[in-house]
Length: 386
Image 1 (cartoon, rainbow, N blue to C red):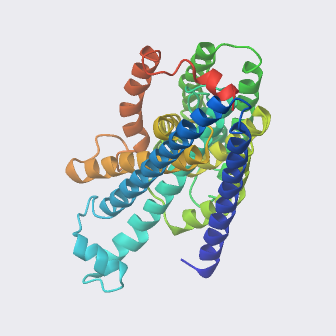
Image 2: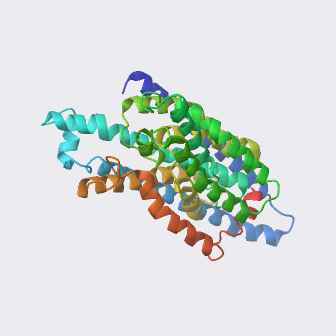
Image 3: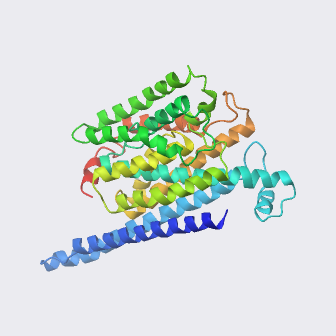
């Protein structure tokens, strides 16, 4: 990594830290206003005895949850450097990272293949979690993400048109592909905003899932007559294969641009128009880098809400961490399959998008079927009050 990349990463971290500190300050002011002492002395005594321990316990639970997510992500990141078609031991990986590789092939595998893929996976997963949190806040629904609203599929159609009409090869243009994907994401974002004017949650979910299923057929119709399926199939399913430091440098520039916008719209409680717009921008970046990956953006904020609560700064950080952890787990499973069994598909490796679909679709159906038992029905009311 060059000094420019390190500087951009440091700038991005400082901006996000400042925004999180701002929202925590606003939360403290909000609770101070809510905890004003009442006129009744008995009520004042009761609130003093009960309110502060409850808030402290909730905050402690959220911090423990975030620490657990961070620890699990760090452990899985170490495991992801070990697995693949060529298995390496922990000592060999550590020696390679320290610049003392015993074999030249180990340095090429770790530094040129696995490490940039790991960084891309963590960044894309965090962006998916951020986009999911933005959409769930804007729609006041637990069943909202870039894939369930059809926005990711719209970006896929835009890039398919680019492949069919302009540039048949996707490699070599990582800075341009998010802009191309944005052309397909924006119409679906406008459709979502129109639906928010009064359409029920079930109809919004049905429309988004229907578009996510129909738009790939349009992609096939565009590419099959052009005989360009092979150059698109590894990307259209959703994959992190064939990624290196060049793609990471482009993604780092996009992170500096889109992450502050998304975090600001989420922590400042901006109107749904701004939140959906920020989610569309973040979705375009993820689609341009890794293709239309599903279920991560929906599941990450949903899991974090269980210990952080929707609307808090812990929920934002937890959604990003959970998104990175989920995508890293799916990518690690795909790479383990590459090492255990050769790919049965027409591409060189198992795409992470296929793993996410096999695991995420049954989970989505179960959550929708038992949404009342899981407490997902009253999410709209809870969000609307925040």
